Length: 236
Ligand code: APR
Image (cartoon, rainbow, N blue to C red; front, side, top):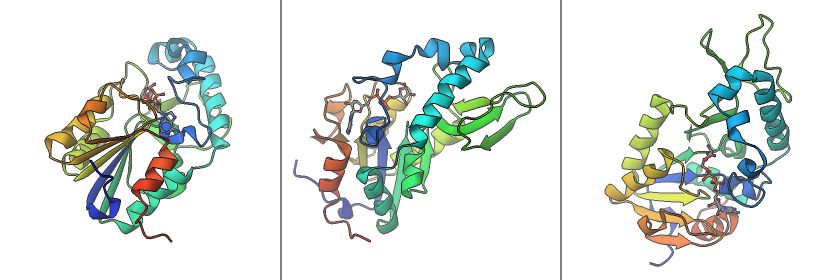
């Protein structure tokens, strides 16, 4: 298949994973130096761990806040944000929690796995966006804020999943960028676009278990491949 021209499409979904932010300096989860190779998520990123040791969970999440706060969106994020400005409809469905799509200017962003910058209190139902680094997890009343992130074992938020499914089912182009496609239910969402007859592109240096579902697999980095795909996109 020839490289399609991004400007030829009207309803585009960018389905992104940790590889989208790799060139910004945010570690991926499963590659070399991956987060889960250094930290056991059973101890730092799941509800039972939070129930047992909220302080240790916040220490880990404050470490990630400090790391991500020092990272800037890369050229790939900028291309996706620009596409939203010039194409009729662009939706970002991201598994990432780093907020770099929004920092690059994307507005129509669905965060399937929540946000590193989100906090909530399950006792009171409060939900806030807070960019403190570090964030003081323990509240004045002794209760704890919880990172508003979808941890392993959590359910995704119905409203976010419904919006993502609607966007993916209605798109004419789905571009998966930097995801290993091994975590469900997110990993199966792109197949809904295929069922709807959309053109399917995968941008990833490596093959993934979903690669066969794509019309074209662009084996390279997010910045390089998005740069090629968006060659005809009017610049600022
Ligand atoms: N450009 C594009 N892709 C890249 C780049 C790059 N510069 N560098 C690495 N990749 C690819 C890797 O080949 C890999 O396929 O990005 C993918 C990263 O995979 P993961 O680390 O598994 O990240 P992701 O797919 O987003 O993980 C999904 O798992 O741990 C949970 O909730 C967490 O959202 C996360 C989910």
